[in-house]
Image (cartoon, rainbow, N blue to C red; front, side, top):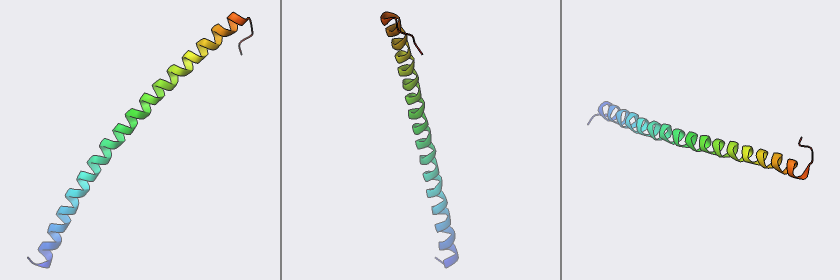
Length: 66
């Protein structure tokens, strides 16, 4: 195998590896994005439930709710 053929072979191999790495990173980004969205939904739900509890507690104790 000549040096030129070896260089072409290595470039193709590196390009293939880079495509695999890029695909894995893309998949990982979607996974992380799903986790962030799920955490945001949980956070909104907790905030809403806390707000409802604060309002009901204020009515029960006849305190003003800010």
